[in-house]
Length: 297
Image 1 (tube, rainbow, N blue to C red):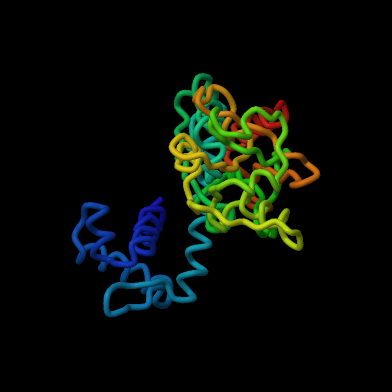
Image 2: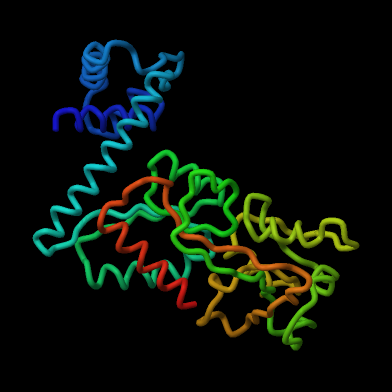
């Protein structure tokens, strides 16, 4: 277990990019942390950090070591979860990277449902765009990703995928609010707000307008779906989201209208993990619960 302590120190230094800042975070002195790192490098057979004028960064050997550390920490969490299950008391920690769409309603409900049955399991949840979520998986910074329209999928092992159409969000007083199904050309003829380029909804909008006489000319481009959803209450604009992010209860001043699927195709909302990784027990059980909930939708 001695190596786990130094592994944690190395992770802190790599994350902070500075021995001094890492020492402050860990509540130890810089000199003590430096000695620990130097002692490990001597045992390891070479330096793992490149010293810079304003800090440190991992060198190639350090990058290889960091991958080993992430694997070791992940395996230890998995074994701890299995041991806890032997006693009939599930515990553990679940780290999730998720799209904004599942953050306000769907994910809080599922976490609360899981913790009601397993109150000793803790969670960390980070909102990420689709590329960031995949990077977090590859770096063992997260266990699960719940993302809309992933970018690469090279190391992404899909647990469950469900279709999500793009819907229009507008105020109840908007001229188009009385129509049950909207055409994309009508939406874009009105002032509209769109997500920034790193988000899956924007990808689908660009795909739907490419090569056609339709253009995205947003009055606002934003990286916050909450901002876009609220802005339609202040100006007669249209924003776009996927239904899982705006299911009832919603503000009664808002209406959600489907867009004709002939105009814009649905995207895929996926829950997945790093390909080939064996998840800790608590994480695997939660992943299955979320997969079942998505399938039920």
